Length: 170
Image (cartoon, rainbow, N blue to C red; front, side):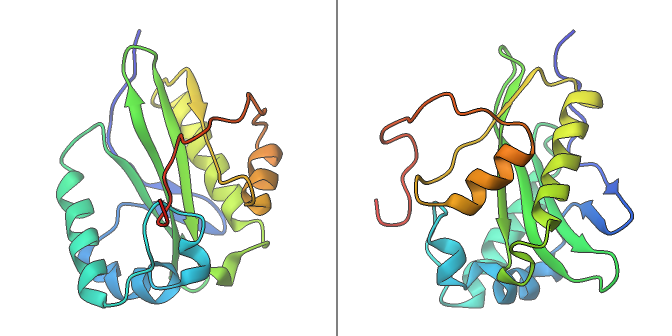
């Protein structure tokens, strides 16, 4: 049957909203996680020093939403309307009907369960709406919080892939 590509659709729950980013989100993206070295420590990019870096990235995301195979959600807290992270499905493989889950979170919501709930909603959407057959994820070996999040979501360790992902330090 194949993947039912629909692009980044709204995913709504009682406490969080997953939605496409808008250019108006740039300031919160910068403030809440893109400029934070502690967040960037485990990601593939360096913390942004200037908001114009974030503006350019968010503008690129917004332009990519016309591609129905582009999946990147802004994680918005329903009670405050604040954008505190992102969830993505990347490395989409149409032949294998698979994608890779990624998540970036503001320290404001670390260890609150928000990331687990958001990632769980995206995984459910990927399987039940988009018809993916496999979702994988990876994390840096010393990122125990991500390991715990993925374990809660039912991910199983398949092995250690040396040099699979380069972080900001190479």
